[in-house]
Length: 428
Ligand code: MN
Image (cartoon, rainbow, N blue to C red; front, side, top):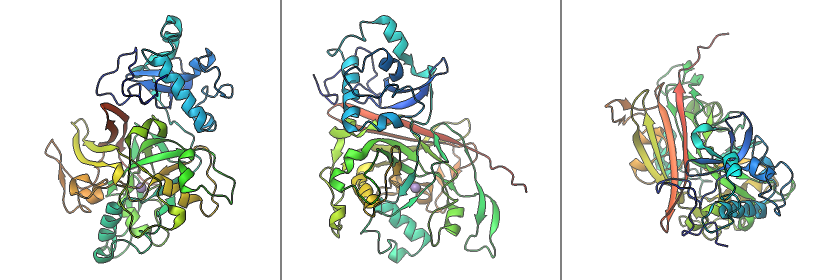
């Protein structure tokens, strides 16, 4: 049997050349079928694949899946089965869908019509029930830019930054699926020229281009995950928009870090791409100097080459691409983040989400936030309709996209999108 990552694999279902979801991807998600049932599924080209039906029809026989793993409104039960089972399910799907694999599904027309649903007939949900969400700050370029704007240009990186992956605990309660509108938050702010704090809708609503990963069950409290074993605990990756209100953030964040400027919404892409699907796109990260402490040892090919882009569309208007960057430039890797997060004995649970922090490149057209792209509003961007932006306007739709490309195979994440709705009027 061919590896699911083999560039020569083709499917008996036609997939357009520029799709993010060829047979080499096989992501996992959760969707509502046209009959209202919510199930776990996969995707090939423009088809959703109902894994609950496949399971009930016996196509996963021989794989140790607890009964009803995919008849669930979240992937958590599947995540709990562990990496060997994730791999086995992906291999089985690859075989069932490929031209020269197991032909049993291809040759069974009534099963096909039960299992394969046109993508535009399903509604995507949150893929995972997230218990805990942690956000890192792993891009050196982003941390330097923010340090220059919010603190001291000559000491932009704080003394700890090159020695540990800085992070904070976020809130899972306001994680939302792609497409969910985002209400402009109200809050307290005090600009450098304001004599007193003021309250009202944020005037500096921003996005953050990030990549997140889901974990499975970690070792018990008091134990840790070594960086060389970290990937056994990583289920898969999604695109992540950590919406941020910069005016609220700048006033509130000292000394305990992000709070209400961040926790009003964070959006994630609906299809989780397994780390196993990303093997062909693995690469080294930047050289780390000083060398991190031994518990933060950087594994080989710790990074993933994911081309990322950001677009804004005004209400009723066309998209303008405002940034392009790559996930491979992050200073701290996912393995280092997981090793650091657990080295004190902190437990990881099934479906925890760890996000990278804003992914910014070295050049001004590769920054992962409007804070940096417009340098805190001092350099407005011009969109294709001629309008200007310093931060997001009501009615704007912000979209993140990402894909990998190697050996003629493109594997992508699709998109994560969200439209800004006006703030609600605050009343006592
Ligand atoms: Mn963030």
